[in-house]
Length: 114
Image (cartoon, rainbow, N blue to C red; front, side, top):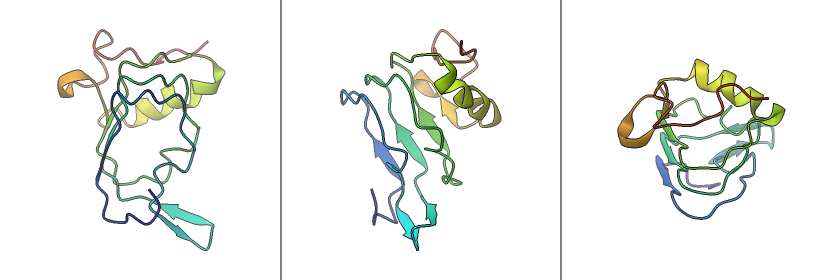
């Protein structure tokens, strides 16, 4: 999404996605060092994602909602970082119908990776 500096919403729900690059949501680069994104809402539910790159959300200071339910997550050490990130950003990680991530039945994310 590079160059789309006004992009606020990315809706990729149900698109059969299997993986994402760590720079997928970068909308602007500064001298190939500093990257940023103005995206506020990301819908990645109901795809085939099993993992996420560790720094995929690290430059997204404006992120308000992230929907990830309905993916076959592989809850191993590769996603351990996400459990910590989701805990720190519990107001951002959403589930079906806007419920908070604390409802495990609505939002089966990796809270305790192996």
